[in-house]
Amino acid sequence: GESVGLHLPTLSVQEGDNSIINCAYSNSASDYFIWYKQESGKGPQFIIDIRSNMDKRQGQRVTVLLNKTVKHLSLQIAATQPGDSAVYFCAEEGPREYGNKLVFGAGTILRVKS
Amino acid sequence: DTEVTQTPKHLVMGMTNKKSLKCEQHMGHRAMYWYKQKAKKPPELMFVYSYEKLSINESVPSRFSPECPNSSLLNLHLHALQPEDSALYLCASSLRTSGTYEQYFGPGTRLTVT
Image (cartoon, rainbow over all chains, first blue to last red; front, side):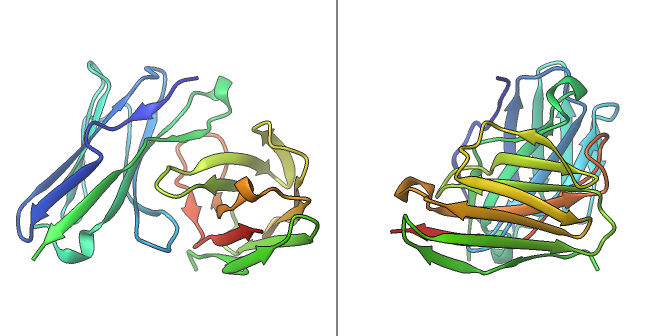
């Protein structure tokens, strides 16, 4: 079936720097994308989402960019903090004929160095 | 209240035991989900309930039996599990299954099958 993948399994950044986590998706029919953060021992926590009719969306310290031409999604975290250390998953919602199922990418570990 | 609760947090069971996992939400969501997550892997969808009816079963073995007694509760009954079923079991809910609705995740139940 269709899948969502990530380019970098682990990302180490210095505290205060900006982080960029990338994700490639393969289903051009997907119309909704979400970034989740999962800390050790916890369930995934919603960070930000974007619909396919947009190419950028900003939240507090986070920005998601969607490039439908190359089927690429990225999460930018400004002024990365130690509390941002976690595994980050992108997820795409498949089209209606796939039951609108959420398919997760492999995940990227973000490590913030103080 | 934007919380999904799950009990128990941890569960150890033998291969001949019968146990149940419980999930509860009071957000008025009409879609509820069970996911399985192995270590260092993304969540994998198991079941989807929409308006208390099972709408998706991702070819899950019959030793896992879901139940949705009402719109706020979701159970996962376990029987004759195998050691490879050891994982984090996550429950999630969303307003609806169709459309771009964020899924809220619970903290999960860490299951160990001995």
